[in-house]
Image 1: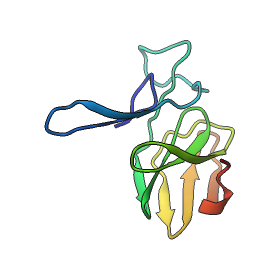
Image 2: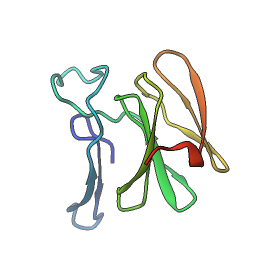
Image 3: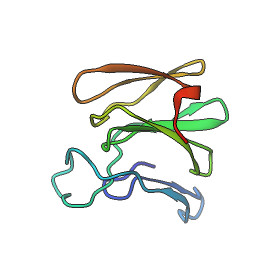
Image 4: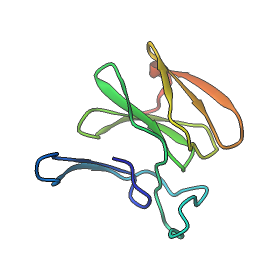
Amino acid sequence: MRRAVEGVIAVQLDTFEIKYRLKTGKSLAYTSPYTNGDCATVESGIVPIGDSLVFGASDGYIYLTDKSLNAIGKFNTKSPILSSVAVDGDCVIVLDFSGNVTRVNRSQFAK
């Protein structure tokens, strides 16, 4: 589940207990009117890629995680990502706030 101030979380659906968290970096743009300061906003949908998950964040990074939200790697686009990512095989395609389209192979994610 994406959040306005703390990155992403995963919850147990029957109890709504927070099971996992991943705080992203500080947002480069504030898109929620009730946020400011040290926010870690994720507007992008979270998409499966193989046995992992991938999403973009307002800090300009594309994040690759396992299903427990442990970071596997990230790729810096240098501009906020507000749209969902697309997956094509082992590649992730994203449109950032600056209008750039980036295609990243899974092997290009920095640890």
